[in-house]
Image (cartoon, rainbow, N blue to C red; front, top):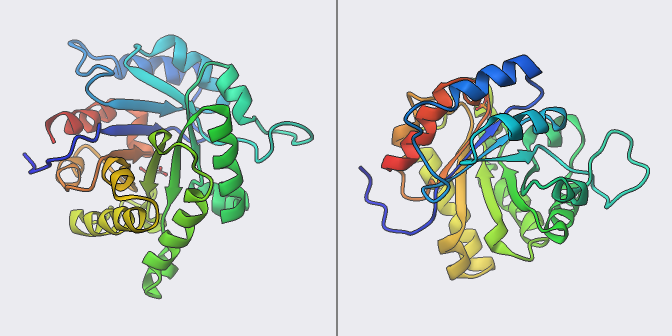
Length: 257
Ligand code: PGA
C-alpha cells in the first residue's frame, strides 16, 4: 500500500490506437467485463479510446462503469478537413473524453505544440474532458532536455485550458511507448512531481494538488502496482496492454493504491 494522502480520483485510460474489428471488440468487451465486476464509476475513472469507427460498438458492449472517448480531434471547429472529427461532433455524439497531443500524432501527423493547444481549446469549448499527452523522445532525454520539452509542451496546453477540472495530463516518455521499456517508478515519480511543480508555479497550487497526472508507456499488469504506488502517479494511459483482459488487472491496481 502507498502512503498517498491526496484525494485525487484515479484515472485509467485504454488507448486502442488503430486496432480492432467488430469481432475483436466484442471479445475484448467480454474480457473487460469479468464477474464479479471489480469497479464502479465512483471508485475511479476508466476510459477506453477505440477508433472512431468502433466507438459505437464499445459504447454498446462495455458496462456503464467504462467511459468511451475519442483518440484525437480536428484542429478546427468544422469545415474542409477531410478525415477529421471535430470536438463538437464528439460531444454531440454523447462522448465526454478526448486524447490530444499523443506522441504518435505529434510525430506522424505533425501535431505541433500550437496545434495541440488549438485542439485543447476546441475540446474545452465543446465541454469535453481532455487527456493531454506530453513526453520526451529518447534523443531529447539523452540530450538532457526531458524536462525542458515536457515544460514546453505543458505550457502550450496550459495556455488553452479554461477548466482544470476537465484536464488529465498523461506523461508518456516516447521511448517507453510500445517498446517494453517502462520508466522506473522513481523516474516516473520524479517527472510527475516536476510536472505538478510547474503547474503549482505557473497556474496555482490548488490546481496542481487536484490535477491528475497519469503515466503512459509500456504499462502492464506486472509493472503497474509499483508505478501506481508513487505519490504523484494518479493512473495510467495504457496502449498495448489495454487490448486484453490484463487491462482489468491494471485497473485493479488503482483500487488498492
Ligand atoms: P503502450 O502505449 O502502453 O503500448 O506503450 C501507451 C500509449 O501510447 O498511450
